[in-house]
Length: 463
Ligand code: GLY
Ligand code: MN
Image (cartoon, rainbow, N blue to C red; front, side, top):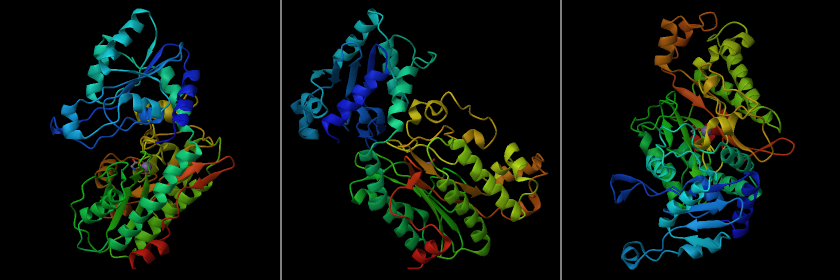
């Protein structure tokens, strides 16, 4: 955890940004897997972590904007629980560690909210992403939360997004040290290990084991697949063959739950083919050029559009596309090969604050989300600011069902050379991703460099 002062200052800033009322934060509960007592690994709510730090279930907190009162809700364990769970810090000890003086038992929370509602005070909640929380909110608010129209507080969301978007030095250090000491070794080991006749799960298991061995966890389910054209492919059961491209998109989560998010594409057997090299270098060019454009105030959408142009131009030079790059990109024909966005904000969540709504985090009032295929998947369009941490992750994929559909529908035949594209149906995909801090004057790629050029990757693969 950070010091009490860090959490106190974060809450103080938040309370200055919200005009009036009560802010209610819920920590997460345990979540059952196959019967009540057999639970998924516990993951605390990231907003709760940010303002209250404690990484244990069954806590809540209220901030009263008018009085300035800060209350931590929770229950001390009785001896019955301690027999099974060991001694747990008392709620007042927990409160002291984060600079809070008032504690109340959890059964007081509903009544406290009720009393404030009876006085017509505004109650600020965040949007729930777990069903049990929706049910709980329905009970507290005396409405069917799932059916209520935007019962959450937009004012609170905007205040939190403004605050959490800008990472301080200690937060950046959490991300950077995790990248260097845990995530980077995962990739070096994966490159050395990616040999024919191994199963994908041997690589993904090794990667996750490296994190667990050091007391870290994973920031999201590992993608480790020779079918990298399936963007979020969590199946790891394929036997790898010589010449396959293995996409590994994985990242450790720091002990304080800051995410890392890296992708490398590895040639199984250690050598890229000539055809793979052409596409790889194109993705690499898009990634490095996009990173070099990062600086304060540039709209992230411009970075996405730049990646789109590089990909369109390169695919045209290879004979897979045709026509003017400007026209290709403006109609979105390149999205057949690059159907996702260039990246997203990172922090306590790998897609930072996605629970608060991508519109608030990535678009705000200045930008409107496009409905065009591909561009519609861009999670963030807004202008960059110093302290933002973002991913840059272009990719090129040959997705057989999508290619077949577009060809049958005669989509963009003036821009896509379907005859040539068909000869790439067995290609798979290539993605390259790094994590980048926006600085006062430009950018800094976080963490020690992870092999990325064709030569660097091949060299590690053949050690
Ligand atoms: N790391 C997976 C993603 O960014 O969606
Ligand atoms: Mn990512």
